[in-house]
Length: 201
Image (cartoon, rainbow, N blue to C red; front, side, top):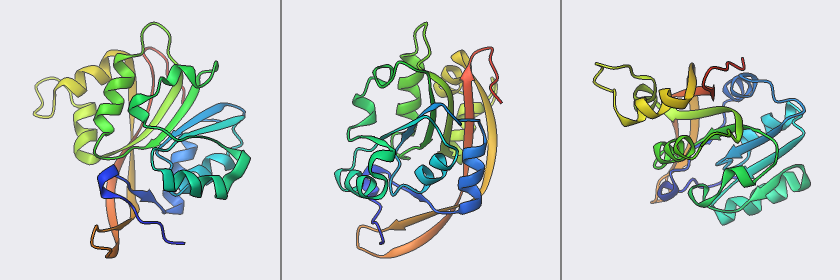
């Protein structure tokens, strides 16, 4: 079944098996509670489940994809069919969550900024493994006196330790608004971020 990625929602679907395995091996999630943001067609979801988490929550705004995920995984996951920007993540579970996200490219910085600014004194997550476009990644890890240095760099270093993982040949399935299918090869940056002063890997 070919699922059309919606440009208006910034959707992109990971399909490279090697990359999916690398992403889910960055941090140990066996027996832990996990949150996946933007699961899309469920490719990364499949590999997360192979790591045997205790529970997997997924947040998917797209109603059509939420139905696909329900048909594909049934009770193996808990689907939250809502907008990530409208959710209080600390209300999802009473356990700290390991978070994975192939984030929608058009709101990826907004999501990360929201999470950092809303942390307070109690972290709701144990780790963040997130995929960004390269230009966004460069801003996240940029240091002072660098042209990429700015608000996102300051926020990210304020409360997070960020480790950059280079993921080559991320393959995204996509379809234009005119209905033309295609394949795009991207170089995307993944990050494992833990709360300040703690390295989890």
